[in-house]
Image (cartoon, rainbow, N blue to C red; front, side, top):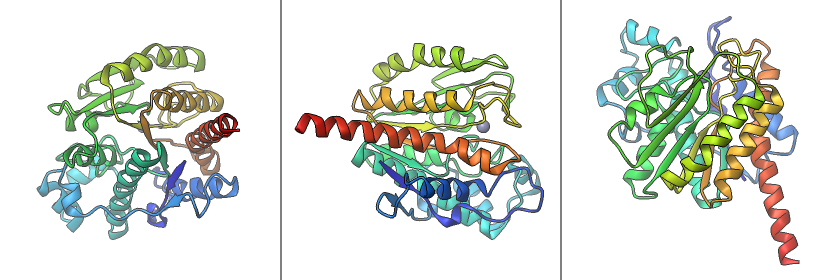
Length: 310
Ligand SMILES: [Zn+2]
């Protein structure tokens, strides 16, 4: 199991800003302290350059954001104050998801300690999302012929509208989003398959819905790679959520997605997605369910292989 992290994932925001920027470094330090991330299995991504970003995003939008000349209205829609550091952060996170996907294709399973900026559309950013790491990675891998079919499994509580828009006319990437219907974005962009859940759904119902959908979806799409957005804003106490999953429910969800893909031989690249809480340690711990589920899957498979070999 491979992990991807870079210290540039964090850049300072004004005091009291509601986007929980420090969580990315906290995720990495929890994974280090638990022995899930080591210097051997953790990889450092390159920064996404303009050529990579414009695989998906319009040159005008990329240029306006990177130069800082983006207009006030477009920036308000993103909801983050522009800074040089923010451009570095967002480029590094996009590079991180592309590297995660490449590592997944080589090794079967890899997770980023950031990523999931799924509200970014080709021509504009939205909802704390500047460039769409999932969509840039997917588009660039199919364009270069590394894979012919990708399935995006987006289980963040918010619908993946930017990713849906990016692949509306591209059959090589199938977009699946299961989210809270009443939540942001209020005007949804239809993806290939969308499930809008009612407010307040709890573990048992949520997991049984996922179990009813995911296996047939993988079999229908036949992807070589799944890019999995494991947003933890489905958590009961999330500030921007509206669903009611427990911490254990999130862990079970992540284990299930990884297991269903891997037992069919499909590579999985996981990104952390959204999660909003004033308690940053609790939030980071919640995000680490993805990496822990991946780590435990990997350990279990290795053990089985060793037993078979023995
Ligand atoms: Zn979200």
